[in-house]
Image (cartoon, rainbow, N blue to C red; front, side, top):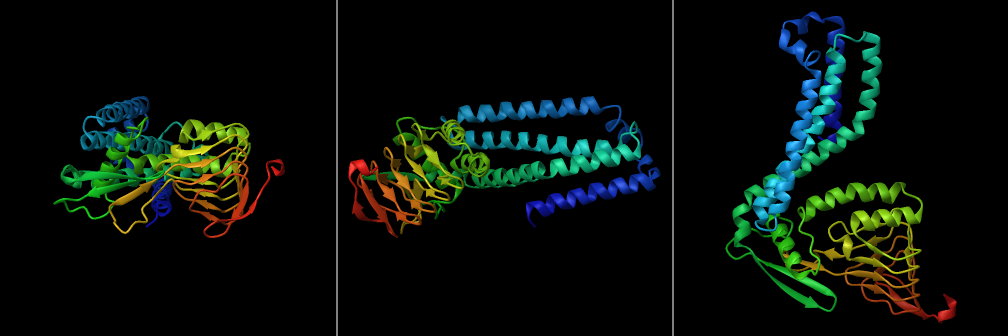
Length: 351
């Protein structure tokens, strides 16, 4: 059952409760004074409780965040638990508010109905998002917990081939068999932290990618002005973006390592392009390939093209629409195709 179906089911339950309350309010009277107090006399205290729970979750999250550098697994579990506390407090506030509208005695039935309809429509997308993140984070938490002992058995080797970095996970006597598993992902983050000059020691790559995905999806689809979009990508995804860069609508950035993408002044990509700084396309299922992407000054990439890890598009070059770029493109030329090949040289004054 999808997230929307689950949320829809809960909304139907709330609606049924409201209808029963209208026609048979006496049913709820048997629940006694505590039920009445929760949704009438104790409203302020209940909200204070939610705020306190939210703040405690934030402290747990922050404590786990600071502990990750010393102990990856323990810090990660603490961070994820704090995130679950934060999300559950937000979900609790939404549903408590809806139930309060139904059962509070100060409002007329007509006012309750209007408020309930408004709140249901307003809260549906937000509640769906919170439930999706709850299932996402809780599933990852379970996987990290189950594989906490496997993580310590894993080791890794790093192999550099030009601009590409291959991180190979050595399973030793563990039960880990694929890079998508939680223990392997944490070990990859260890390796990436150790080989980078300015490492990001924050939350797990997959959870970080999920959070970035939400924000970048909004920017990708709804932010129109290029300068606004560039500022958001710099701050949120940590892209390196020069002046007068144009990142068109529906451009997808790498979800795990977007900070390896660089746009120099005047460069840009067309609608629907994909920029991938990592891939798992290796014969060894425990290997990940990571490499930076760079668009040099005034380089252009046509719509719906894909740029693979380790690729540099040379200054003033143009890549045709629908291309897949797997190798560097020299400066001042035109390239297109799958894979992209140089078809024409350009003079500097043509750009």
